[in-house]
Image (cartoon, rainbow, N blue to C red; front, top):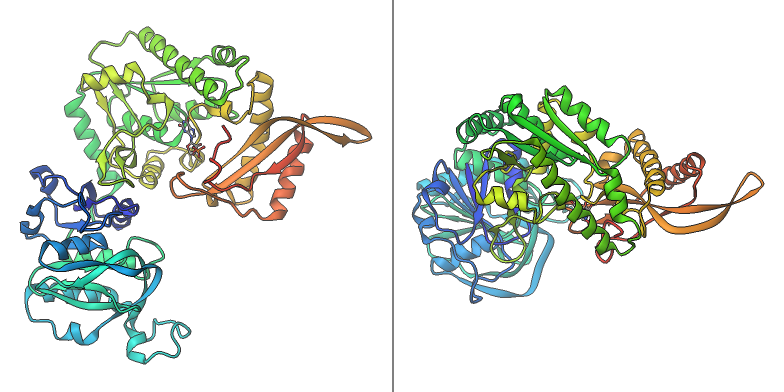
Length: 551
Ligand code: XMP
């Protein structure tokens, strides 16, 4: 495995994902964590990530000094490189102006050729030749730098930069072999140790050769084996559950989303299906045919104890008369917990049962602010502040079989386990369901109207090959009616808003630039099919300032 020390950069997660893409397992740990045996066990190399901090700031994250004595190959990225420099007698200073975005980086052939014949240099040559091969004149774009001297063109590429500090003095032993177009150190190696530094971000897709660089580091330099496969993951989960759970029952609450469905399928595959209790609440706030689709999938995968709780009436009456978004959410959350407690009680499982959750790797790591700390991020009301979950957590009886996976890996696993593509590729759906997409009071009638319109919208996106280009798409029923005509008759119909956004993680989002033809045709189809809807609008707001959901 490759260990990534997270100093809080927004792209730390991407480093892990990129390296896993070519089959090497990665583990992200807080940048200032003591390097315990568990962290180092099986580690073939360590990457020091970027950070929003500056190395000279008080409180800037500092790695366990042992990292420099492990003998393992190190790759410092941005702050990681500056950290290595500052920790070894070099100097880091603020730049007069940030280097941001695509910046040309030129590798210095002379510096590379003159490297001393030490092991570090040998590794460095391997490192560089692994991706420099693709920088040959034939591969270089003829339009890229037409005026530049051939030698420059041959060994330069566009890297992705985002830094306000730079190396003012290299630490002893470091050799600069790449320079940015603005004249700042961009690629460094150590003359005797397998240490490398990049001032740019190879994990960002816009960085030319970024993937090659990470691959060269993980495979060629560290010698990590590309053995991270989903089949192997299944076997590890099987062994782990056999040891932790034994013959005890396991209960999983299924929401209908990708994560909990895959978690359910994984439990059925790795445990005796007789041990596995799956509980799904049909709140009446679900998408069209959601309950049928989810239960058909789980039954097909061998579920023996699938408990479907029909509680639509309870939810609709709890929501009756409520119009304030926060009150609606609270009412749903409270009722969810009450019904959950009651129904789990009814199952009569022995005290020793385990509660499974579909938590992902990214849910466990809080990045962004400061050094990544392991924290259970509150994501869904299904597993938030629930006394049941808290009690099980305190008793050490929670299992999270997806907690080492990224979302795309969960999807790949879902496919291997035989879950339908429709569920595997499903867009996210909020815990409170349609209740936050029906503005104002929620009624059964409005749920039905929205369900129908949303279903047409989503089916059309799939039919037109647009669904997988969009991160999340859905319809929203507005609490407004407007005048229209149907035949010769005036009609007073509801207004529907369509939303489609592209995003990396839902934290920020851009409006999907819908082809106008598709939008017009979908609008016509909805107003022709759902008679209560008289008008369709398209939401063109990004996040921020708008949120993805309307409530
Ligand atoms: P917002 O509206 O905050 O949504 O921009 C970001 C993402 O989170 C989803 N979302 C929720 N998911 N429980 C959930 O499980 C919720 O209460 C909830 N509210 C929003 C939303 O669909 C989007 O993907």
